[in-house]
Length: 351
Image (cartoon, rainbow, N blue to C red; front, side, top):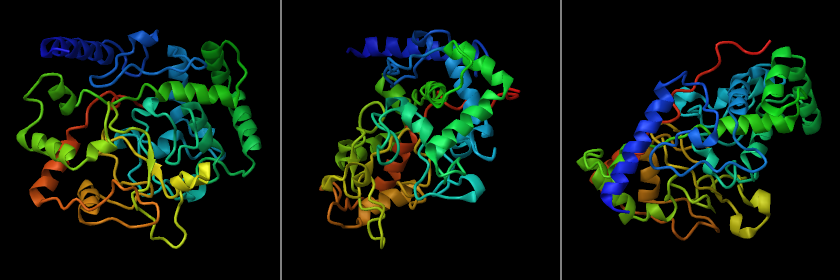
């Protein structure tokens, strides 16, 4: 595509995004999926055939996302661990659930999860809908009951007893029955609208050569020179694969990641390659939240990694200079954009 055409498309996308965010209440949703502006740098949202977009469903999903009544004791919402102001993470090494219980993995950002082929660090959910069910029944997250099906039934009943929710489910799904599948579909619809694009990098690639400064451009060259693009590429800066980078593999009983799902030896200690969108804000890093800063991440790959029997062959010490490290951090920060910051809880919840 010629630069002029790319710049023209860029201008149209910016105008569409501006109209979307300024023309009405920023927590309202357009009536049709094709009217939902996608920030520059992203591809159209892949809506599943069995859970197509609707404004009513997205709005219901937004309310459910912030409502702590989805949890067994009314203390934890999806937004508790995936906070808007923290780029839809919680900035904790591992998330805290009901009664202060913790798991073993860092809460990944929800931003651009619409583009993930699988969900969770180990990819155990094949859809965003399946992922949305998981925390509701997890005893380290939102449930007090180890019986998954019983937890789902209790959640359905809690919401059904709320007249306001029966009305909203009827508007979104055509009936006032409340099922865990419809709860998940509403949540997933909302989460697919949480996007990040139109970053300095996206603007630069669209033809605005002033969008990134000299240090960020140097960092982009470092990013390519040292093979970061082997894993972090495409619109979402990840190819969705699972690889072993060594993190946590020196523990006495390491988290085996994808292997626990597939029982394939090639997946031993492997975790999903995360997006780099908004990575400036989604600290701490890695599946266990053990790496505090971007500088620490770069030092890990730069100085040496934790060797183990399944370490990916792409992972080896990079020996970056201090200037290269600094430039690389600047480039990574240039991947922060817009399309997610405006979301907020409802003024009141259904009664």
